[in-house]
Image (cartoon, rainbow, N blue to C red; front, side, top):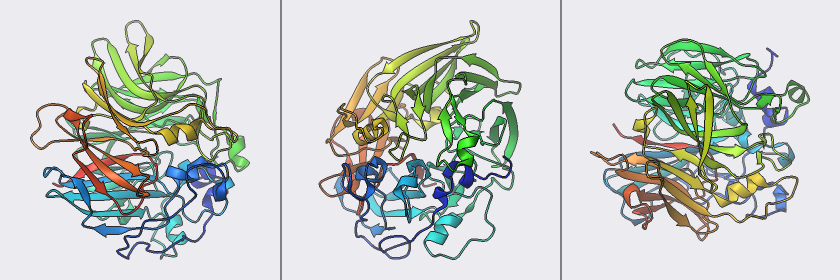
Amino acid sequence: MAGHTRRRILGGAAAAAAGSVVGSGLGLGPSTAPAQAGTPAGRGGATGERPFLSGAFAPVTEELTAFGLEVTGRIPHDLDGRYLRNGPNALGLEDVRAHHWMLGDGMVHGVRLRGGRAEWYRNRWVRSSQVRAKLGEAPPGQVPPDDFACNTHVIPYKGRILAMQEGGPLPYELDGELGTVRPYDFRATLEGAFTAHTKYDAAADELHAVAYHPTWDHVRHIVIDRTGRVARTTRVPVADAPMMHDFALTGKYVVIVDVPITFDGAAAEAGAVVPYIWNDRHPMRIGLLPRAGGTARWFETDPVYYSHTLNAYDQGDTVVVEYTGFPAPFHVAGRGMGGPSATGSPTLDRWVVDLRAGRVRGSRLDDRPQEFPRINESLVSRRHRYAYTASTAEMWRAYEAADGVWPDEKFSNHLVKHDMLRGGRQLHRFPRDAAVSEPVFVPRRGARDEDDGYVLAYVNDPGRGATDLVVLAAQDFGSRPLARVHLPGRVPLGFHGSWIADA
């Protein structure tokens, strides 16, 4: 297996297919025309039964730059920075049957806010060597191993903007206008794979990661210290090369979630697009690795697909982990629809790991469909009160479609604010076809309360055929948005983003 790269293993032969980009306005021109791609929401057309290539998922075909964006309402003056979100946006796709949504080329969408104005919108592909070739651009210098246009997250880190990916590739550094700078290896200290879901402990000024790779017999806990260099790497043995999309962090522990989705070498050799399978023989485990050093202690629990961490914290002789998860089994390779496939909707759940009793107690916090959980990021690894999630109707329909059969259940679009202390929740609802993306909390300048700030999210406006950046007051969550920034094009449904505040 040592000869495999991420492109060969995760993408198969088809994922490396190159082609020409459709449309114009790529990169340099100040185009404001909305991008056109895919087919309308529904079934059939050029994409056939491919929900992850149509409707709100349809890739855009142009890179746009627009200045002086129209705004409904008023943008708070203390929102001074950039709101960025990453996601897959297939470029030069020649055979839709060989495409998987999670392997689309990464594209970052950004809005610059300053002084109560929306100064600009830009969207840019992450310039991996493959993307450069498809766009007909000059190749970069040295190409890193497992090179890929990172499509999963974009984060700020010590004055840099990093596009992130799991399973092999290095992050890509971007500049303030979303141009690709270079692959980033934390000052030549990162060796091997990284993750899309880092955890930043603000009190310790440490960036933590749990990385996996299909050729490893372990996962790696990586600590990047206040100097921006890898200070420590701990190898934690695991069997079957599981996919570990996310993890959690407390003040005392790194929480490693060993899910029963494992690498299938035979499928990889046969050219499977995503050679990972649900493996009933692989036990579901939660590992607690002491941050101070030592070995992991493992606890078995009922199988789920652990999708995303809300937060985790220590509480006496227990560790509390809150997360969104899908019911078992979860088919990351999908069931004939061009993306991952679920047997039910994701919910907000909690584990309490009892260190004395040696067991895990699970509970359901909210059974309505929801994903992309976020908190006030200053509280990562410490107890929080408020949480924010998204429910996106078109995403749940796509996830639960299988072999051309669509789910009968009706879903809705809304954002949720959870009060984890009192058990209450507030909803901010959007129209039926207004697909909503991940909510990101931004604290108000000088805030003292945990929820004193704003919630930002991209929301599709079906009437305009474009997307708005919606700004909500977190403490008045169900009321009208403070502002809607009207973008010149559409932001396809994707993954994760961040607020990049100006210094």
